[in-house]
Length: 332
Image 1 (cartoon, helix red, strand yellow):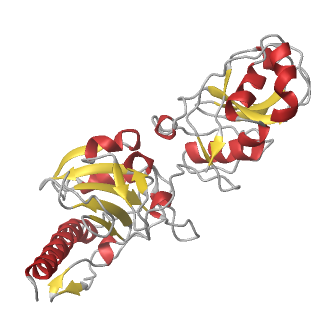
Image 2: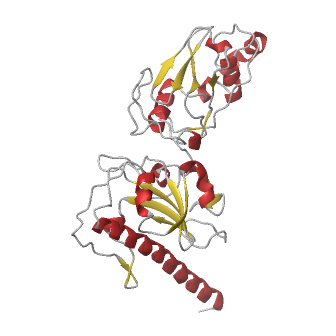
């Protein structure tokens, strides 16, 4: 075996041991929690971490809106060579975890730095079933050393084993724990497979400016000399690059606790909003309005309002001439 090949093999073995150690230490903490009847269920990842820190030394905790504060660099190189922004890891859906009748990883992720300096981003399954505190769970092993057991199955995570040092690459120094992979840059993936940009206040178009571009952008009619909706359409590159009312309803469902069902043209009351959820997605904090790409008339267009305890839709007369609504654009 040549020296470079030997060094490569040694480095691979060292990385594998570092990864195993992180998983083992984490599972020892969840095993202790399980023995005390504290493994869950919890209603959010933040609630789980609040208990976890009593059993695992945590030097720093970061909400989903500040994940970069708990991660040593901006992007992870994926298996296909693409760069993935760490701040996009907002929920377990970005770990490619799928919601089902028995799993829900849609709660905002939490970043931590453990006592030994390991950065981790965690997602908790809020539908996780409580474990029997008197039951002993067997360990999986690597090289005859323990790795993890069922007490850690309620949590998905990504972690880094060598800090800022390169290659900063998935399956090398970046490891997944109970996760299927990294691959979606969408904080909320809409039904058409699109993501959305951060919210902005559009620059209005005059009637003449609107008339000059309306056919290219899909605008039906122009009237106002301060047309904010038409300005949003222009900045997004056409009505097809703006959210539908169904898209806005899906965003509403995602930002409220419990992911309530919201229809495209439905109002929903008695909602609970957790501070920071919207801003972590590039949206304002409630209350705020977002334009849709759906034009109602020469005077108004459809929008959705996102309040602290309710969300509703509307198309109030004359709203195209007001600056109260903000806009988002769609993209891949």
